[in-house]
Image (cartoon, rainbow, N blue to C red; front, side):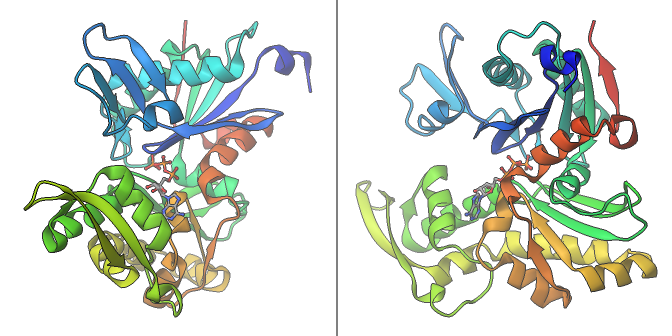
Length: 343
Ligand SMILES: Nc1ncnc2c1ncn2[C@@H]1O[C@H](COP(=O)(O)OP(=O)(O)OP(=O)(O)O)[C@@H](O)[C@H]1O
């Protein structure tokens, strides 16, 4: 490692709707925390960030707000995003002599204004230079796909707020689509279902827990017999109540977001030039992002497309591993989609 790399810690970031991950060049993934911040409502003082703030979601007294500053894959609260980034960067970089260069993964569907907002937040958080890379490219690099070769690779990155579908060849997205349907919509669908059919009101964290514990996208013998006790607020009595929910009900409740994801994959495949479509047929589709961990999602996509589907080795870390590889191999000039130099 060169002297400059030792004093200047270049960092890669997956600034996600659900989780923020940070990679330090030469070291690896050093931070992975929920993208949540908690403020004192009156003094506007930052109280907690990351896991500590997540514990507060839905449980705050009147004077505290705990929220997710990114929604649907974009910055919903600019000030909170900036403070969160600053906090995470200080936590991992500490006192560095030189301001770091940053490579940040962003959804491919973001607008120019949203790109600018991410860059400014990074500069305010201490970046010397910011490079933005589209998430599907970073995810494909992180998943170890041969994106530099003249063969088609297909990646589907299912995050919290967005699902990114892309066919990549020779380092560029040939076709890509970003839909604002991913893990969060699945949680919302579960909560809506319980409210409608069981008159039970549950919070975001409970819905996510149900999805992770017994949720699935495709029937699987054994898993389908599973049940889970769920606690919430009964709408009619206004009192806490526990009900038992079946795995098959959870799958049914998520059918809309699941078909939106499948449709995005199909639309992308339909637009693929024949040579690339043939490559994908031979090599299969790779799933990345936390949503790739949903049981049976690979089976569902494979069943609907007739193509083999593989889940990446570390789906939650694909984007951040990709940003790290870009820094370490110094291929910034080839994959970035924009730069912004701080003063
Ligand atoms: N075992 C699991 N089963 C199903 N879903 C899971 C599992 N683990 C995590 N998830 C979901 O993955 C999502 C988070 O994934 P990830 O960290 O890749 O998103 P992100 O990068 O923060 O979001 P985005 O890419 O939209 O900005 C959440 O919706 C979470 O509920």
